[in-house]
Image 1 (cartoon, rainbow, N blue to C red):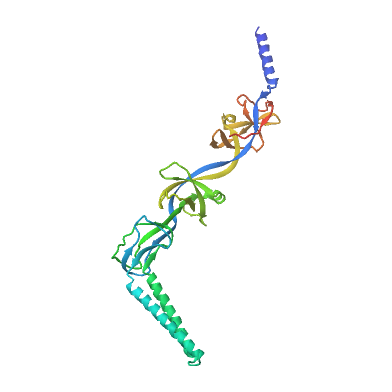
Image 2: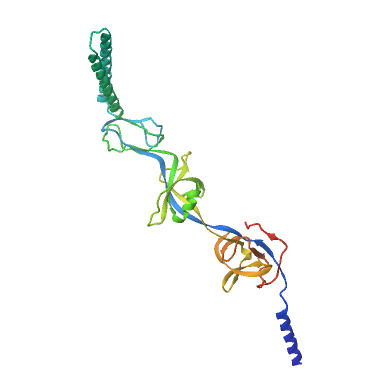
Length: 338
């Protein structure tokens, strides 16, 4: 009896060893490569693209202020005026002198035509006229210097200057900012340089909001900060509705692209004693490939390992596969995972 049991056990073991594994029905797809992506956040502050601090050209007593803080002004608007009584008088005098010298020149030219005066007298009169024109121009300039004119369209800032104040050339009158477009200044990591050079737009978020806004890359600095390993960047933000002010904070989202990795469905990944692995089909036989997870994405994984684009990956029926087991599949699903 014992001999019979031993014989049966031996035959069973031999059958188990010598019989080939049955072909496994699986679902496969071709491996595609995908670049890893990393979201990097930076903090930026806005500034007006066109911003000017106004100073007077000369110092004197303020006789008129034509703006209030927050006023919208246009280029060429008069904002402030200094005492200009002496300059107006000097301008009137220069006009009178010019007219007088021109009349004298005309009389001399008429006399010269009759031969009554030499040509040198006419030439001297012409010189006097030209000098009178220069004097008039100087008087006009000195009068214009008594006025502060808006150099651009914009919004006026706060001012401490009032009528009656005596100011100098170093007195700050007010700032004027054109806020129709703003710059967002931020520092980007060194790894984002390629992306920033090749991409025209980035996504920004106002500090107290989750609503994304597109901004346009305007300028990149010419060098990397050696201490922080970052690059200064200016992004242009359209602010036609004047929703934002200079100095506001924004969160800047930068998508940094990494290396190419095999993109696989989560269901294709298994775990063993040495870590994660997948099954591929080589000559219609199961082949185990150890991998490393590089990035988890929605519904798929990016893995590194000895995988190439176009390799046949087993995505269903992986649980009971053994190395070198024959694989049976009808067609290859070459669509990439979404």
